[in-house]
Length: 228
Image 1 (cartoon, rainbow, N blue to C red):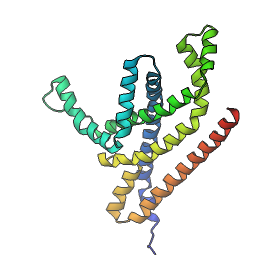
Image 2 (cartoon, rainbow, N blue to C red; image 1 turned 90 degrees about the vertical axis):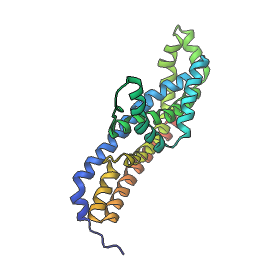
Image 3 (spheres, helix red, strand yellow; image 1 turned 90 degrees about the horizontal axis):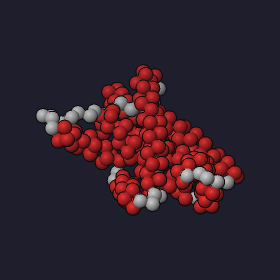
Image 4 (cartoon, rainbow, N blue to C red; image 1 turned 30 degrees about the horizontal axis):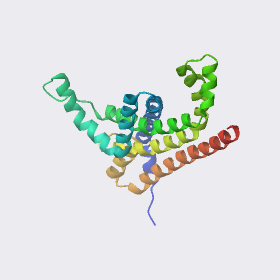
């Protein structure tokens, strides 16, 4: 049996709490921006314009085909060089790990949220849109006031499920040496040589949060199923 020392968690708690707040903030921002950008991408995929459909399809396909950690690396190492060429500066434009984390997660999650949103919009019968247009609404108004509100109710459980995956994926920012929840635990674990206690604590926290969110997703799914 391991000789567990819970006091190490108490000593590391301020750093762990700060890391957890960063992880939750990153999740919230990436979810919010991802849903908004994903809605735009979904509408582009459903557009009558072949150009818009091609742009959205290319973006979604590329993002969904590349591991997130590679997107993080590419943005962190290549974007400064691209900005240097664009602005003709003497040195690469430094972006920083925090900005890299927020930008890459928003870009990456937008592709996944867009597919959920596109499926939700397509699940609404075309008669709804035609009826709205027959009442005098423009196509954009019909989408905004009639189709999207109904689709949103059906999408919420899947959006929440994707957010759970996003919350778990935030631990990948360790490659940027950011002190997120997992990163903060890792630093204290290596410093004090108490890996078991700290990693076990992190696992329990992730388990509790993800379990509660998954139960909420199941309840929302049952609710939307009854009202559909």
